[in-house]
Amino acid sequence: MDEITVDHLLEPYRDLLGPDWRGYRNHCRRVEAFCLAQSPEPPSREDAQRLSIAVAFHDLGIWTADSMDFLPPSVGLAQRYLDQIGKPDWADHIAAMIAQHHKLSPYPNDPWVERVRRADAIDLSLGLLAFGLPRPRLQEIRRQFPQAGFLIGMLCRLGLYALKHPWRPLPMMRL
Image (tube, rainbow, N blue to C red; front, top):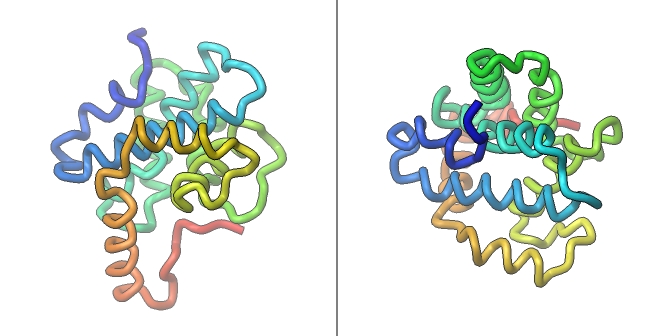
């Protein structure tokens, strides 16, 4: 099996992502880096690969399903990829990392699911939520992987979605 990295996983979606490719890629790389920064020790090779898969696919359903109700399509993309590489036994863990990454309350059952949840919140809050990570480390990661319009693009997409779906404006949020 080839090395599994966020960049490797996102490359087939470059054309679909179009002008959003760099912003989404950098968002994924920041989330991955924030996860690793929260970990008390380096991940095993298997944990690192699972993390890369979860992070690469976590929001991808926004583009593949053309919807802000993207968690089920994102999980489906990851599951299809896992089937392709012969790792269906990873599906439940990766599905949890994706499905719970917008959970508002902590996810105590699995440290990697909780790290992904926190990492995404760190990134979307521009570091206002830091969960104990040192500001210099957050700034270093943000410099290494700049926004490239990601957050503004997501806010615009979310605003348009909310106008079309006023009774369910935030379908990706979980309690």
